[in-house]
Length: 256
Ligand SMILES: Nc1nc2c(ncn2[C@@H]2O[C@H](COP(=O)(O)OP(=O)(O)OP(=O)(O)O)[C@@H](O)[C@H]2O)c(=O)[nH]1
Ligand SMILES: [Mg+2]
Image (tube, rainbow, N blue to C red; front, side, top):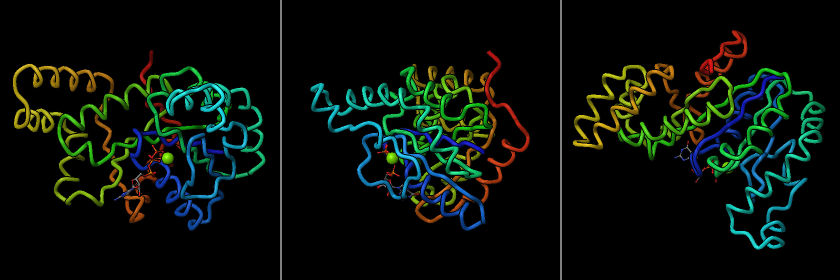
């Protein structure tokens, strides 16, 4: 069993990528199980094999504890951790090769609360796992947007302690040369420095430079993988990278 946790900012395309990846893997004769970990989702674009909504009622939590949407999500996840064993049993019973886990929209809450990483650890057990971190093309097409997205990716990496792939989601909304530019930023920090020079100045430019160097120290340099879940493009390359990690047992996590 290979676990892939799909994470990214709200609306970055996690659920649709989960659906498209399931389709792609199934069409390639692989057995896939999809896990919905988002208590608040109403109508995901796939039929979940395992669903957190069977264990916690987000609307009920919101009402009973008089919480807003984010507070209710936090509370629902905290409660759901009590059912991690049941979820895990369901996943194992699905007898799939690939387990795709669609994570909650408010990834910040999911990753920063203890319940998020605890859930990840409980679900995967000792099985090989990775996270697929989505950088939304809507945000990552500017140098500072790209930098901020990568920074968030590092936060996730620190918390999940899993090998991590960075995916540029919704590539279909960008032009070919824009996509190439972002891919180049990911593999050559000098080009990102240049782009920052062209778009920022003063203190903001200085801070951006510091963040960039920090990212480099953290072990940047792996290319982002452009995909479009809408057009089903880039999935073959994403799969190749997943395979490389699963087969090679590579560890992308910094040695703390
Ligand atoms: N153009 C384009 N739009 C996309 C793509 N993937 C997702 N979207 C759109 O982006 C919006 C959000 O997609 P979701 O898959 O729900 O994103 P999410 O990250 O699961 O969202 P939350 O769970 O609410 O955080 C929807 O309107 C999708 O149709 C894509 O590859 N291309
Ligand atoms: Mg979603």
